[in-house]
Length: 352
Image (cartoon, rainbow, N blue to C red; front, side, top):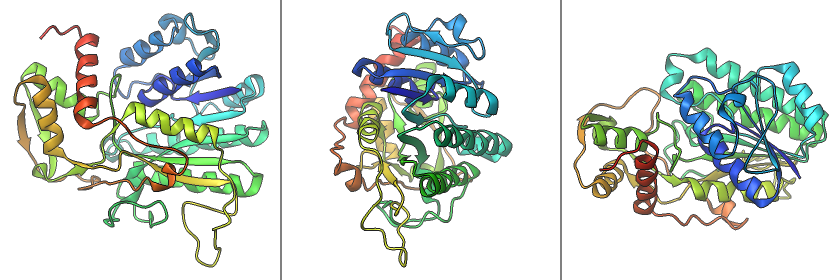
């Protein structure tokens, strides 16, 4: 089974490409390797996949993995309409997992056009590729940020997501609506996954755990927003990958429960589904920081700041729908933090 994974040099995409290759799928990873954060980390992830880092930087050329004969990589931008069209025609994927996007809530406050280009225009090119080339299952990244002003915890997929508070969140909500239209019009099975604060080895430098660990090792301070009065449904990467794999193996189907006179946002008469994918056990931010401090054996200096624009005080995923497919997160915060710190020390060659 041929799988196209976009965002394959990214945090989640790298882990998914690796898991798929190990399970025997023929994987083509795609990424633009942009400079939103250190491109060397992205190239290092590709190297873990057996992709030569010098060849990976060449645009539009499929590079074979030296470690997995069923894995290739191509550097391409989702907004390259002609390139994406040709790629679908040549590779002929049966499954597409779209994880490529302009990420980050705070970054969207200063760079709105990046989100329209990558997350809207780029996703449209993916949908068109799926439509015209017989794709049997599209799985794509949404975000817990779509819940916006909704404070009815835990977040249920069936409830309102009509009030996003950042352009990033709005672009992810738009992805869900775009996918539904293609499911309805062209019978494209599409599953959207609302990710909840993913962390773990090979994570993004702009995410909390990476920033906190870096500050601890460099003896600098961290910014703690809303004076620490925040909670997040922190979810370890291995649990996330297990959930994505379930959706790859269980394409969306029309739901007999869909009522057009009282429509839910997570199901449809089309082959369309939305799932929360989190740990469903939120932790207070200060407790999460304390877990990092325990693992490192030192206190991290903290700058207590007010809430930042575009942020929310709490997230909590209701994962009962995904659990019906067999989803069951296993990694505790203490275990997950320990695994990340071990990776961080290894990657940055820290002996402490």
